[in-house]
Length: 372
Image (cartoon, rainbow, N blue to C red; front, side):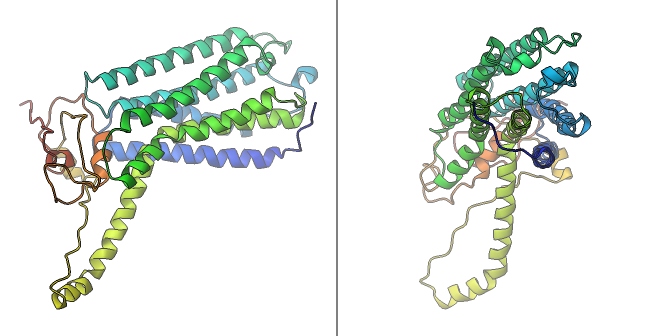
């Protein structure tokens, strides 16, 4: 058996705390963006659960006593604390997965076969989470101080194999599903790559799981201090990574929106020079720019406008970003699909939104029903 190298518990705690803080801040950014645009939906409310649990999980390495090697032999390890920490970890991971799939499902209208399939995966993840919690609860005896049950969870028993198996399968599903449902949507290449990259953030979580499985099942000396530190800290990284993946789409699109705003201001500052150059050279073609659709509406606009639309999953755009019927129209910006991902299709009332880019696409009707 190989001995793992020395691990600094203080350094690990600082690193995982920073990772947890990034995950919590990304969740707050997501909620703020959706609330400001009045597009809060089930996934935005449900994500509060893993964010809250992740905050508690973040402070657990600082609140609990320092780790000691081989807690089974020393008897200094509290079984109830181990059970609680494992429960926090699984709650953050599985609720983040459920919120991720709900975020993907809201892109498609109610009754769509794709939406139904994604929601079935949501129920599957919820069922798997319940099974994990039951196995953990019955596998660990929080009232038994003999230290023979909870630590067993780190061995090659059925509970450990089940937990790692369903985690791996779930991450693979979360990687494949966005690629399958959005691969045929024709968008400009850059925009499509950005969105698919944001939705494929589960690759990082899967890699962390692979490292954790390698440490757990590899030829290493178990239950010494480096092994315990690595196992616990990798679990923290995996939980924070799951929450970051859940919020990746909103965070990435917000960063891209800020980038487009800044580049637009630079172009506006240079516009007088461009105008004078164009007037001196009448044969020079006029520059074209893609329209930018703001996701964050002002409070007044949000109070008077609430986009309600019936999404057509067969929206077809050409390779340069223009729709087929528009021909040489200006290219559709990335915020077309971003706006779609932030809309609540289950809301039934509200006037049409003139700023909704989908209203500019042919064949995509927008309902305009309002309750008096």
